[in-house]
Each structure stands twice: as structure tokens, then as C-alpha cells.
Length: 507
Image 1 (cartoon, one colour):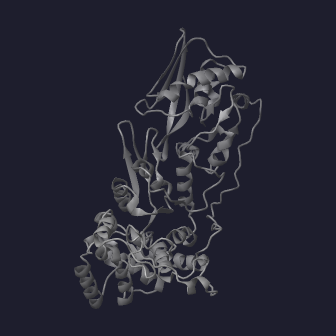
Image 2: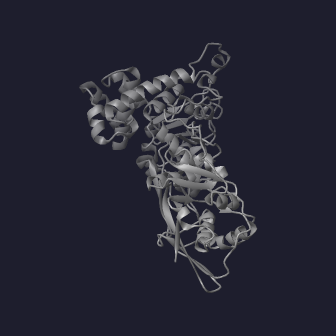
Image 3: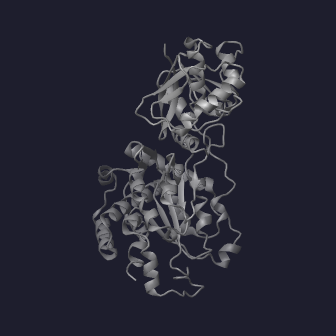
């Protein structure tokens, strides 16, 4: 008779239930079927050693292990524990009925110790959704799995503890995790603050608009003007994470082996890959299909410094996720979709030498060199960046000033208020993500405003996408002002943030 127990496997950011059937018959060979990869095939060696090291009996007969659904490739060592339990149940060392309603995952060492695995939170969510009420995981993964309410999680150090627990020789209570809170996520405490920045009022204004409406931002300025310093302080003015956003971030970092906390994520991610990063590092993929930097920045900030230094091919892969807020990675053996709802911030020098339009340094670049440098960025990519801002060097009077600058907490409150207005008006969506129908409804212009936008479109040769972005930015500026309608002042400021479109391409 075949014994069936249950486990789980990752499928992108989500998980699916895997049923492991084991039959023991006369013979001498071991078989695993159901599209296992090499790490799963090798599990029988680890399982055999772990069972023997625990003092249990490894059957010396023909063992056939089937992993269903058979059409989905199984990867990783997380099936070691369920395979071991299925063998023990099939050889009648454990009553198979004890495994009903139980999900188990974990990698086994040769001496029977349980090692942590990736993606336990996603597996726990799927187990609860599928109706299972108990889950056995390595003790290091227990706190992560207990973030799912309604699921009894048992963290175990080794195979012997699991065996004794199932036989009720070692009574064990479910692990409790008090680190998460269903009331919401408390605002994070940051060691940096926007008040650290002296001067740069225009840049701070652009940051506030970007945070309030979820708009992408490109900073153009000479070296040393504070672009990176300002960008790193953007998370300090973003609204606190919601519970759903926190769960999504925690799941992504769990499946990527980057989870270094025992509870929910409380800080929005800030990812800043180097300009030598490959397209796979940015979007994800590889042999084992890991999320890339754009997914690790989900619900946070993706910052690309020295934007023109990135390979053109790498930058072009950003176009789809900037529009769809998700990335689908298709290969011959898998097709995974990862979320990629990030706030895109980029910085660049205005020219190869960095001193174009610098009032204190003379540039050494020709107009041809500046134009060639600017055209490393494609028009379609620039169209997807709502705010283009010239950053000027900070002068001495600003640096030496003792006047107090606005703190991140003050600006964050204005951002939160503006976002609440947007969510109420559009039914849960911020301005950067509203649909064309919502744009027509909520971004209406008066006669004078329409004439101003027509002039800007003709003078700067703006595209239809740029037109749409200007309207959304103007709506955000109006929301920050508490205005019901978009006025000439709001629209003029929004148009001023399209400096890159005409200035650099028409040199």
C-alpha cells in the first residue's frame, strides 16, 4: 500500500501543495519520479543517512517515491523531511494516520539535523489556504511560518524530534510569534533624515511630489551635488507599510534567502544595484529562478545611480515592469511572475565630465559629446519617468546656514494626507497608477490650462505618454495643496519637470 504525505514547493512568489507517495516492495533500488531535479534525487542519500543516524530503520527494499503533480519540476532540498517521513510511514515505523492534515518541509543533514529552507512564509500561506492545520518546519523557520494565523506551526531541530513528536513521546506546543501585529505596521525609525540636506529646496519638493503620487524621478546634476544622499532619504518620507505590503516584502525576501528578521518587514526596501549589474540581476531569473533587484524593491525604492553607465539592454528591461508593476520570467523549464511595484529613482551627470551648466566649473565636453551621452537613454524609458529634475551644486551660504530644515516626519505627514485623498477619490489607487478613464475624470483642465499644455507639447515635442504623466503629476501637486481642481500653478510646475525631453535631445 502506498503512503501519501504532503509538502509544499515554491512557484514564483507563491507556493503549491506537493503530494509525496511512497511504496515499498521487494527489490533493492530507490526511485524518485515526478520531474525531480538533481538536488531532489540526491535527497535519498541524505535521508538514508539521517534515518540511520537517528537510530531508525532504513528499508533495504525497492522504494518508489512519486511527487505529484508530476508535470511540475521539483527543486531544492526542502523535500528531505517529507520524504523521510513518508519512508518511515511506508515501513510502518510511524502510523500514516498521524500525518493527516500535516505539511512538512525541511532539509536534512547527514546526522539528522534540520536545516532552514527558503520561502516558508509562502508555503505556510498556501497550506492554510488549502485547509491544512499543522505544519512542521526547521526551528529557524518557525517564527516566519507563524505569521500565518490559523496554522499550528511546530519548529523542530532534527528528525528524531519530529519522530518523537508524532509518536507523542515528546509533547510539543505550537510556536507563538508575537512580532507581528494585525493592527498594522508601526512607522520605522530611520538613522537618517531629510533635514540632513542643506538647501536643495527644489530637489526636496520633487521628492515630496514623487512620494505623494508614486511618481518616478530622474535627477540630473554634477558630481557632489547630493543626488545619492537625497535619494537614500526618500524611504523616510514614504507612508508606513500596510500589513499586505509587509507580507509581500517578507515573502519575496524569504524566497530569495535574504530574510534576516524573525517577523514582518517594517521598512520599505531601498535597492541600489551597481551600474555593472546584468539584466538577470535586475529582473531575476537564472538557473533556480530567483527574484531580481526590481522585485526586491517591491513596495519600496529602486535607485539607479549613474543611469547612462548601465548597459542599454539592461535599462530597456525596465520598461515593462514600470508599466505593469510585475515581471514575468519565461524559460524552457519554468514561467514565474514576480511583483515589481517599485518607486523608480535615478541619478545621472548632465554630461560625461559632469559640469554642463555648472556655475562653478567649466565643462570640457562638446555639444556632440553631451548629446551622445544623453542618448544612451531611450525615449520610451524617459517617457516612463514622470519627474526630470536639474540638481544644482549647493553653495556655501546654504551649507553654513544654521536654519532648521523640514524633517522627514513633517514631509511624511503631508505625503500621507495627499495619498489618503487619492485613495479615497480613485478607490484605492494613487495618482501614478490610475487608469486612463480615471485620468480623464480626475485630471480635467480648464481652458487656460489646456492652452498652456498645448504650447508645452508643441515646444518640447512631448509624446502622448508624457502628456499623460504631466496630468498625473499636476493632480498630485494639487492634492498636496489641498486643491480640488488643477490650476495653472499646478500645471506649470508639472511641466517644469520635463526638462530632459527637449533640452538634452535638441542640443
